[in-house]
Image (cartoon, rainbow, N blue to C red; front, side, top):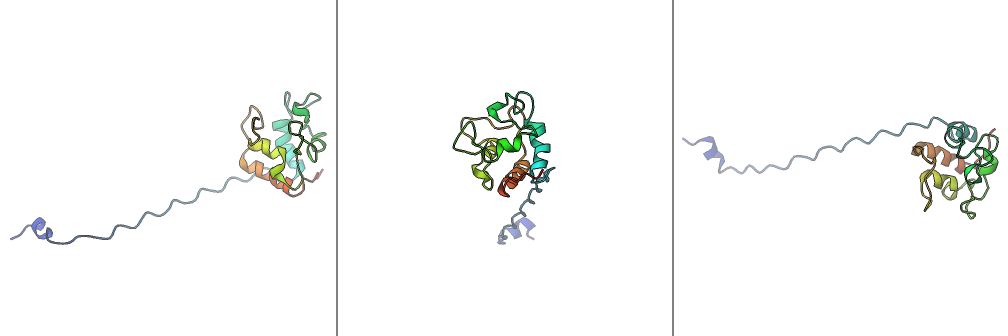
Length: 142
């Protein structure tokens, strides 16, 4: 009598390959921003706590001549040429990609530091909210 191995040696056991594993689930969406795409909320949630601080963009000696304190920031941002690149507006209402503010927040200005300087960068979600405010015309809702 043949053993199992002897009997199986003449059997073609070629099976199709197993199906590939399912793809991994997509990553969860980023958390929503804690503020809306309007100037007053951006001022309160970003500019005041992250930018308008001593030694940065506050007071008479504000860095780059840009005072981001609540009473001054809108007038010093929208439609105003950057002191570091006169051909680029700090905020070009309607066009975030050529707004110096977005370039600085995303760290895409050659030879320049990403803002906020010396702190963790803003989340992409937060930058996207600022970008949406600019896209929508950079309106002062105060």
